[in-house]
Length: 194
Image 1 (cartoon, helix red, strand yellow):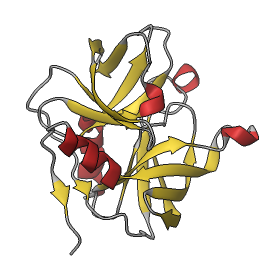
Image 2 (cartoon, rainbow, N blue to C red):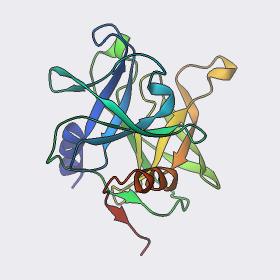
Image 3 (cartoon, rainbow, N blue to C red):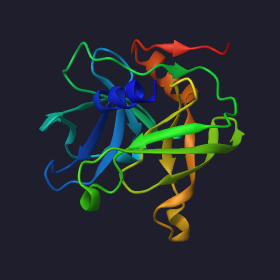
Image 4 (cartoon, one colour):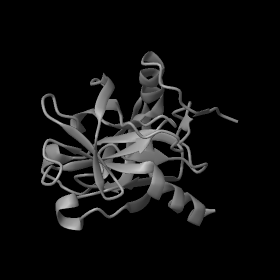
């Protein structure tokens, strides 16, 4: 089961690059629809400038569909269709065990997917305090519950304290992303509590 999950990650996660596709800094994004819609952190998208998604070995232009700057989540789109997508969890209930996958520190690590595990320390409304390693480039990474559904998006570390590569990170619950998708007519798959 874990092997299937990891194989799915390779096709459903993308690196989001802004400004210069070759030299630009990157973040992580993930497919939320089968029509090319991708979620990532809002601070990963430029106010002015170009936006690209690294898909295979090609840089594909992307456009901004919708943004929630308060919760630091956005939806971007590429022209690729018939992709698979992750389910978004409709609940921000506290989960004892989580996994996060992303592309941390592209300038040092290159384009290498990293998988991390950890746990949620606290849930306050749509804010999740997560104990899991995070570094530059992992922003926008999906945070999975034990069922493999996305219930959070990594949005911040503790850089305000001068700590790069922090274990205490902040995520936004998938409920903010679900609301943004519905507002912009993006068809998504949602999992509901059992």
